[in-house]
Amino acid sequence: MKSVLLRRVRRALVHATWVLAAGCPLAATAQATAPAADAASTAETAQPDRAPAQDRAASQAEFAARTRALRRAHAAVVGLEATAVEEAGSAATLGRERQGSGVVIERDGLVLTIGYLILEADHIDLALGGGRKVPARVVAYDLATGFGLVQALTPLQTEPAPLGNSTAFPADQPLLIASGGEDGGLSLAKLVSRRAFSGYWEYHIENALFTAPARPDHSGAGLFNVDGELLGIGSLIVSDALGTGQAALRGNMFVPIDLLKPILGELKARGLSSSSRRAWLGLNCVEHEGQIRVVRLTGAGPAEEAGVQPGDQIVRIDGVEVSDLASFYKTLWQRDAEREVTLDIRRAGSTQSLKVQAIDRMKTLRRPEGV
Image (cartoon, rainbow, N blue to C red; front, top):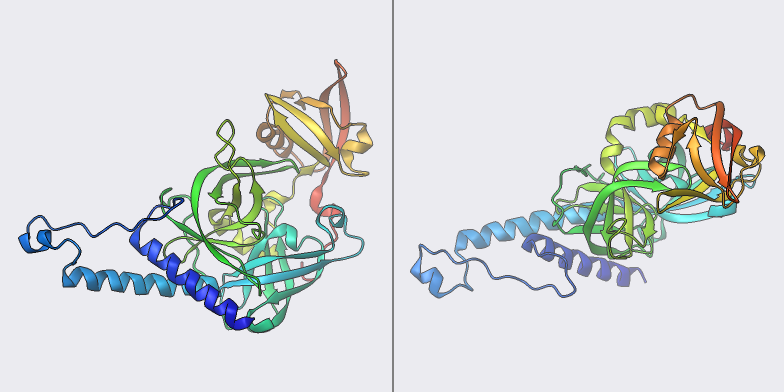
């Protein structure tokens, strides 16, 4: 089983490196383009399939460098297995047993993953090659970005993945998605949009990365550029990867690595960023045609306690009219976390005001050991 997996990984790396080195765009059928002929050389023009020796050497060097970079990137991706405590509120939607991936980002075995995998978890293992597992502890869960950090408790002896620039890379650059564990895989992907993302669970980030085709093993997977640099961490499968108002396209949403850089020190020191201390209502909402609708409520959460019901349209928050999730969340978060919030809702054709006692979401979670 292990040898089969290793052969599959090697083939994927060779194929990915060839495509990336060639600079071929991702398409249903990839075609290699011949080297451009040198117009100044009649001999080279007459034999366009034979590149000059120096061009061949440069191409081979680039191929070798990218092969090494992609192998390093793939080696930095590990499987992650987490078990939440029995009393975890998140178990109702995420289950107690969770599996995904993470990426080693520091030499001491610090692993970056998607936060929901380790939310309220009290037992974590990192799954390495050959069936080896290493225990880990939670270092941080960041509500604002969605990132999670775990620390291996024994040496991983793994070269960390360098952090790339998730804001500035070209949109037409082929990308590599890597997941970890015994069933981990590699595949090529293309960036199809870079935009703000608002989740129904009171979540919003800027410059989220949307790729296609979709990978089902996206949770915590690494998104890498042609140089093996980490650009993002896998979060979701979406049906609107191209964006609102565009043709439907299944793809993945990745949390961009540039959100991590300014808060990494804070996460390691405090277990969360200051932005994660913010108001929470316990609402699941969707936006449609300029309206925000409540679809679900957290049991015994602030909104349910205040009388909000599924189907309600949220018209205003604290007197500010809102018609999309981004403006709703930003208005909610711009003041103290624990305060009274006024929601104007429309129900059955009439409007009413409800007083909701917002709370700090982080205080409702069972804090895993180590945080």
